[in-house]
Length: 312
Image 1 (spheres, rainbow, N blue to C red):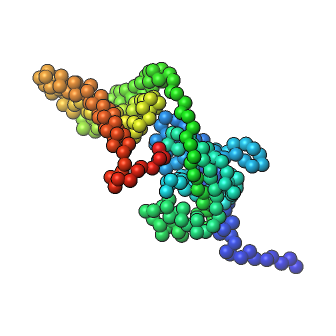
Image 2 (cartoon, rainbow, N blue to C red):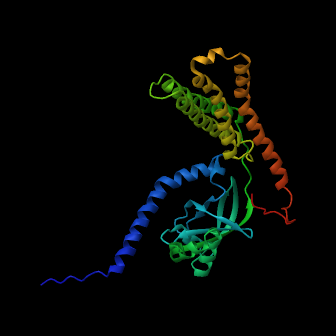
Image 3 (cartoon, one colour):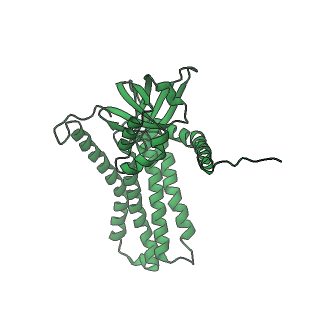
């Protein structure tokens, strides 16, 4: 007679959890991480680099360089990170190791140390999840995490940006084409629609204009930040999209008025045209001026009179 030994019920759940974690981790390494690495190395890095950095460490046995994106928090001049014990790269940091860090668009040399001490792990988790400390203490990371601390030494020299005009021309051409094509196609599709009344048609045109403006703003930010890295991508995209929305709102007025649009006196469309043309430029100039004032303000001490962090 064959006997079967029952597997304890408590073992199935951890094994299933580890298998799911490996699948999720593999998907992240193959799909998500390459995109994140590209974005952090681009001029649009500020979309992520406020909370994610690139860490490069050399394998002690293989000698090859390993570059991983990781979430971080800054505290007392150090960078705090958390990794998972199932990953292997952090094992090169046990006794402290030289690393290279791409932090907010600037490369730094530094020293990183990994710790498996529960107190250090919990302290790092609490720092990274200051808004939800109870959840951090109870998370799986508190049990299976690795605490990593990085001390930065010196920044690497910046590479000089070249080909700025060519970059701007390409960005303006591609972004402008996409920015105009999207609302133009939508307008052509809904202009004579019998299923939609004038207000829905106008709303769709304006929404498409906002999307087209966002595409143009993203392309412009990619080129602009090569020369002016202090200009925030999100603010530039918002300003460009808002300007496009205003312009297309003016363009959608005839759709709302229908046959009565021809009876409107000429000064009204003239003023609307000037507003449409000037709105985007004025909003973008406001972003540039505001960023310049903010940059000068941050150069000094903080409001309490303390020197600011040397990190970028």
